[in-house]
Image (cartoon, rainbow, N blue to C red; front, top):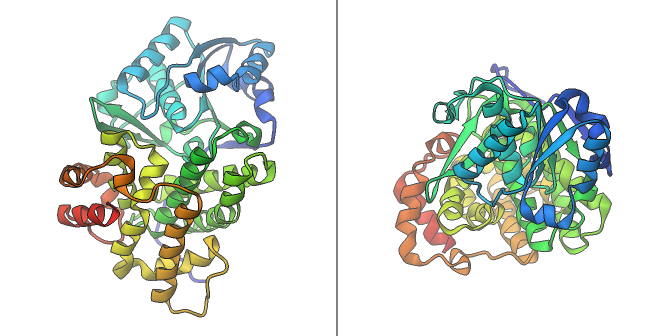
Amino acid sequence: MKISSSPFVFNTTPSIVFEAGAATRLGAISVSRLGRRVLLVTDPGLRKLGLADPAIKSLEEAGAKVTLFDEVEADPSRETLERAVEAGRRAQATGVVGFGGGSSLDVAKLASLLLGSNEDLDEAWGVGQAKGPRLPLVLVPTTAGTGSEVTPVSIITVGAEEKRGVSSPVILPDIAILDARLTLGLPPAITAATGVDAMVHAIEAYASKSANNNPLSKMLARQALQLLGANIETAVFDGGNEEARGAMLLGSMLAGQAFANSPVAAVHALAYPIGGTFHVPHGLSNALVLPHVLRFNAPDAAHLYAEIARDAFPHLDEGEGAQALCSAFIEELAALSRRLEMPTRLREVGIGEEHLPKLASEAMKQQRLLVNNPRDVREEDAAAIYRAAW
């Protein structure tokens, strides 16, 4: 096996706990790191379900006073982040726990940064701008999709529609806790969307044009696709299957490690305006444009997609040439969305044809992602991809 000898940097979460039921031991695992005044960030839905209650009880039994911030919404706003920070300041928090989906984890990351450093958020946007320090941080995902527990990225909605990101190793957590039991109650639609999101992370990390694309990310991306491809349908249609749920959670984390170091590209760049403007969940936004972006990329990336095709779909014929295997891979991804009973056209999520030019214009603002795409994307290319997805 030949590997590139190009220099690279690989950062990840230093401690990862993979254990069914681990969230009930959150205090024992993490209070020594978090300190005695903990800000726990989650969303109102999880709070209402009581999913965080055992974790909160565990922290309290370990001697921590817990301040609960449960106002995180999908595509969290800057205003929500600022309220979380204010709650942490009032409590004089010594550590932060993010408990929930990617939105809660993203708010927790930046809350720990702003509480720990009093940094100006407007100076932290972008890649490598956040300086820190941050407060101790523990992340507990309840979905298998974003991989946020091992990524140095937080995405916040600014104003009515614009999504901005902070990308810095400073906001990687101290500990990630992967507890498959927390994902058992996820509805099929959310399981499907977040699972495809994780597959997109692996695919884009593997084919990324980033100068930091590296052998570790490629290896992790392939392992992630093996786990995700083999288990996503079981997790969606047999949601109580703890083994499949655990495999999805682990696959999501591995894909997160991959794209945290070999960044994602045009699928995400074109998905963000769909979520920001029409409030379509992020994973579904990715799924809607995925096959169309890959078809656009195929002239420059067919050999890369062919290399990973059988990781996700082992039944594909490895005797085919790269072009044929790439095409089969893309068709399988499109068919997977249909099997998972996901919407597959932009028109199915309320996007009119008249909105496509604005989506293309907004996508071009995501240059930090587009620079990683295997093929250059111009605004007219983005418009054509959206038309194909419509």
